[in-house]
Image 1 (cartoon, helix red, strand yellow):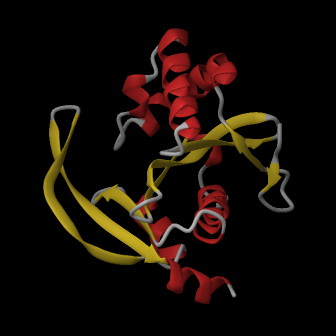
Image 2 (spheres, rainbow, N blue to C red; image 1 turned 30 degrees about the horizontal axis):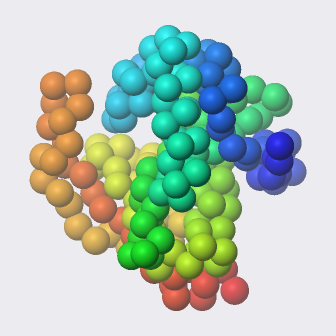
Length: 184
């Protein structure tokens, strides 16, 4: 099992796997309302079986090379994560995303972790376009897209139904040549 340091503060990034189901559920329980404000993850992982099924779905997608999921740990505690919800190697596209419980907020963890996985996707896997979708009201997620050097492509008006409310979704992206130039 590998763990990649995210800086000098001891935070690490490593794959989230089905055997983490109990730890992942405990993490969701700690941050359920905060995480669930804008994303459905908190509503999908409600017990150990659903936690294991969610992580197994990403293990299967990783085996098929169509998605990846990683956890962010600080002081040995899972506090959030980043993922490629989708990866289409033939088209050279991927959609990245994130979540955090309150204990992980304000430390730059998502930005640092997203940089690592985007760098891997562009430089190792040949991804040409990485997208970042966020509810327009999710200012923290949009701030991450900006810090990653992404450009705002547009808004999908009322395209996301979450907990009975329709949200506008902002689409942000970075292209491989832009990423390489920014990280050179």
